[in-house]
Amino acid sequence: MSYYDVNISTILIISPMYDELKRLIEKENLEQSFRFKIEAEVADEDLDWADAIACFNTKTDYNYSKVKWVHSLGAGVDRFLHNKTWDPQVLLTRTICSFGQRIAEYTLSYVLQDMQHHHLFQKDGRVKRWKPRTPGLLKNAKAVIYGTGEIGQVTAKVLSQFGMDVYGVSRSGREKDFFKKVFTIDQQEHTGQSEWKDADYIINTLPLTGETEALFNDRFFSQFAKAGFINVGRGASVDEETLIEALDEERLRFAVLDVFKEEPLPSDHPFWEHPNITVTPHISAVTTADEAVACFIDTLRNIERNEKLVNQVDIEKGY
Image (tube, rainbow, N blue to C red; front, side):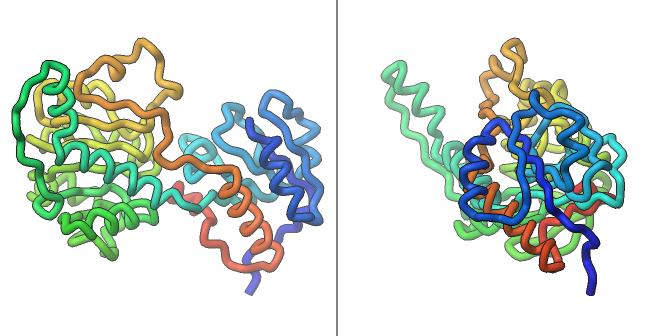
């Protein structure tokens, strides 16, 4: 069976950490020729030279139709596809590594912080107030995870191992391991299932597509009375104004946000000052140079061997 009709001999790597990527890639003694550059140094001549490009979250809209293969050094590919036209002749792949475990542990840390009342005890400590509070148990809590792919599944596995009831919402609604039940996005919007109405935690791991843009809006947040919201998916999936309103009106107890419409988050953004919002600088699933190179080389070798790629992006779906 033939999967790919591509011959890759010249590869352009675009990254701020190109020196480290160069060191790791050159250790592999690959047959291909490489150019390693930061975004500001890339010229049209580089694109004309390259058969393939590997990059992450560049701000420049390159003419990717000039190459045969584009590889994202991160998990997300909305930078390449969202509200853009992609040449179907160009193979697009993404990095798959420890993202699931990293995001699961990030999520668990904030769930435990909430269940154990860390923020309340910190406030009490500042005024020397002795006020016992009984910590909650994960086995008595309920989470709804939006996105049941690799990241969502690992997060569901970690939470469910502590006895938490975990439900999923996905495009297909297909049942997956570690979820008690999986709903489609349409079911979530129209059927009023109690599985998420009384949820303790809403966790977004979805990629950014036309379907998920501004998915978390006023209509969505109006369903809840006590949930905490954790966003490790994409910032543009959230209507920022209605998120703040939901917190102010106590429909949400708190929000932990790792991704934003604009990054870095501007210093005058209201998220910084809100007492019930925790901002982290897009670190829930950091791609290390070692992991990025390992996935890139594995993908390159699978292309050379004409083997099926587990990290090929479905252009129609956007992930």
